Image (cartoon, rainbow, N blue to C red; front, side, top):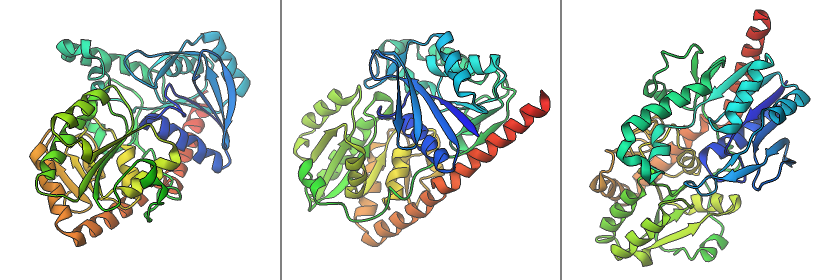
Length: 393
């Protein structure tokens, strides 16, 4: 089977979508399928490259002004058509609603190639990253939702990463069936073990503190100010805690100002973007992983930390309750509830047995999302769609 994957956010870009697509491409290739990913370049030139076990075809691109580390391909339909015809895929899997995704969808439909699509985005992911949109967020949200429907025109299946988010979207206007398949995580990489010593020295992380962490984009819609404020309250009574914030984004400068304002700058480490190897170790440094973002369709960074055996404190919103099971592998609190986050940290830090038990349970939940479990589900879905398309032709 030849599978073409279209994605406007792809490695080496750092985002949940980029991570999910790379995991999918590598996982399908390990099963023996031939995989081609079409994605924007990291500069203004087109190129072809190999990433471990699959091929990436890069389309020349331009930077996107309101999102750091995100580029938009200047697609030309003729170029996309040639890529698809040369590869001759049995099925196309589209992941994003920008230029690459929509152009590949259009061309695949015109060539009679079956298409499935995964939705990774909620309107707030865009609205809260563009300050000018806030005064008109409600109508803009409607417009973006309508625009999002373009991703699904002509597709045979719509894939969401969790069961719980199916109810968050109006799927009545879409003819294709919606299914839930996890983005997956490679549990051979994310494992619960002692972190390597170098990681403490490299980022000047104290070895004698409990670490409250966030690892991911530092963008406005992540509500990371809640995590910072709740940590500041924790500092008033706990001398042995430290905060770790890993990543970059358009909210970074505001967060840096906030830790200065709260007088906790010496107790918070900002690492900026890190390598994959460093990220694995930073997850292992973590004691509790905090997720204040209400706009998550799965939250791969949380799943990664769970796979490393870390308990979670998260908001009860989006799809987070599907992974963070309250009073089982973590605690759920209300959106923007600073005091709720602080109390949850305390309940874990004050009870080492509970902290350990929740971490073990988090690993068990993560094991149900292993690529060894998830990739065959994608392969089965592709086979079903291809068979249906051939029967209809």
